[in-house]
Image (cartoon, rainbow, N blue to C red):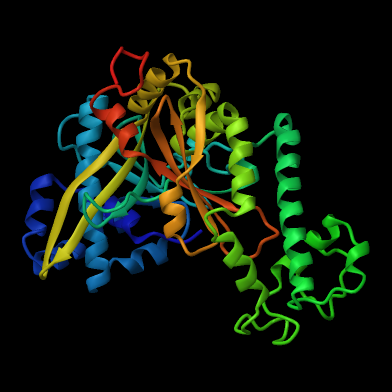
Length: 414
């Protein structure tokens, strides 16, 4: 798991009043002085699950890290505003403690860690803000340079693990069959085109052409679809003009690529199943139920998706208002959606797909014409592992959460 500097910057900023945060944003010199004060607070009051020294090393006054502190200040102000607005915490409350999670969680907050739905950390809090006794607020932290920039992704997960559990085995197997059939066909075509040479290929089943368990490993170090190069240029040479990697990526980048089309059609045929799972994984809608089931006693735990926004503009730090979406707000928005009995739909975003010259496709999860999640399905390298899901909330669903209902049947409006 890669360390994210904005997490420790946010942790440090949460120990200061808003007036001090604002003063630090008046100049880069002020910001540098603030970084030094924040580092001392972090050393004394932040509990690290792991990587303490690495996180602390980020808190220097280099231009890159000063920008990370701008993100942190934006997020910290957004967090304080959120806990006041949605959880009745006194305005501008500073932290008693902040906990940074990761592969290891600090002992005090470890009971809030949840393994569920294919996640080791279904509670995706990057840090936990404690402003008062038994008051804990988990933050899934993202960042972007300015409010109108593209929203950061909220999920990065293998395709088959979206449907976790034995009840989904049949669906997972059918998805695997789609992938095996497609890539075996591409291997056969590559053999025909002279990119690969596979002895007795016509007698080999699709599964062998996909997994390559019986391949000659002295010639093919990787399964056939993961071959980098070609027969003429060398199988490890992905710079060869007819490289297998380029051959596959070119086909996967086509707007009408059959693999993406079949996977999307399959997801749409089972749209409600995929919708329930994707919404849960992206938005953590069952987090409070999972925490309640652990019987942890008398405490407050709130959770929000938080985005810090800022930049260094013409030599001056600029922090925009951080955005926090509370889990209760998400649940209310989903309640509106569920009151509409229309089927969820999953459709390819044709315009984005046509613009993307890469091994990926874009699609939307929607209901009654209102987009809910913008999703991306992509291969990052090897083709035998499952493709990865990436996704975020649409602008329309954010409107449902913050302004009004757009789905017919929820309140009669659209």
